[in-house]
Length: 422
Picture 1 (cartoon, rainbow, N blue to C red):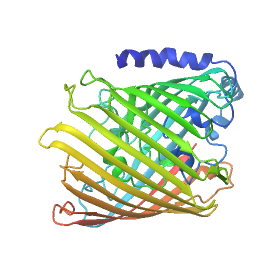
Picture 2 (cartoon, rainbow, N blue to C red):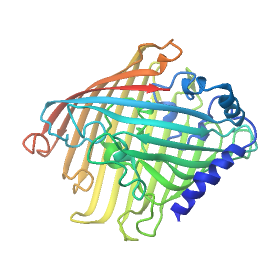
Picture 3 (tube, helix red, strand yellow):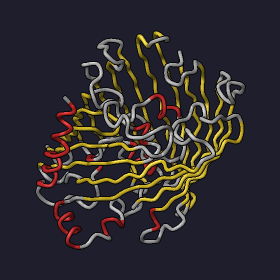
Picture 4 (spheres, rainbow, N blue to C red):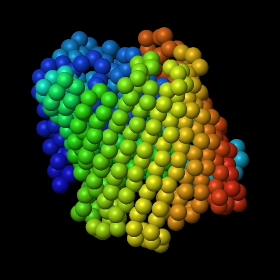
């Protein structure tokens, strides 16, 4: 079903985007981004003004740029490359880690993404939007949904490809601040605080909650009703966790929402809360044995420079092969301080319990502490303002001897990545 829908999306959906009347507003309305409506405001290192789009649009000739501007289309991209070094207790593939540490002590191309989108205009009574986003690099081996580009790469290297997002959107304005946003296709999961998009995540390495407790993307339909500028609620019917082609002839369901306080601080709501509940069968050829996950994210700005985020997650799954009844739960805490216009610092501490070992392969409790910087060396340059570096030091601990070839309880790593938005 979804493969047929995807074919329609690729051709007909883009035609609808191009046919959308009028020009999209310069700043994307929060409602037009389907993933993480509350976390988007809570990210401490927001993209500088002018991105998206970036200089890619600026270097296009007037014969290309003007028609795209008239249609509200944007083309832009992101590249991330990084290095993780093993200091103590690691292995060739670091236990408990995925995206940034499958091949340690090697400089890696994590992702090169190219995006074509049209944000809908939330001031209109009705408008269309959409997004096509491709990815190349090592992360694409982990982001792909089953049934889509399953063999678009080789081994554990960096030469993988993925269609990260492919969706259309329709906007129906119902009041001064309210409206219904309909997203259909493949889109990033609204669950959790972190994202596979490095520019929307405060640290280079990912938390256990992101890596093991939350899906990356969904294929399906999501209805997001924006009640006003402070509140929204959504309901979705999808194929499941990271599934493009239906593997069990049964959908999964999600419900969630976002709530922002009325008090503002430096353009941010002082308090932001997001929640997501998802349930449905995820095992191949089984329409029972549901997997259910609940995720809560709360962000508070103490000052314009100091923000704090807490995420809690719990998951349950029935009938897991070799495990039976599986359960996982954890809490992550982030503290971010903007030092100056050149840098911010983030400290993350986390506890994750994988009861039965269905998520990590180890029945135990996992802990991590990460201290990292986000350095923007040229914040005032017209092009290089979109260049950033994120060095970090991370210590992991497990109640079982999961590190160092099964002989240690802990590991210590250092890493750094470079992000350039164009």
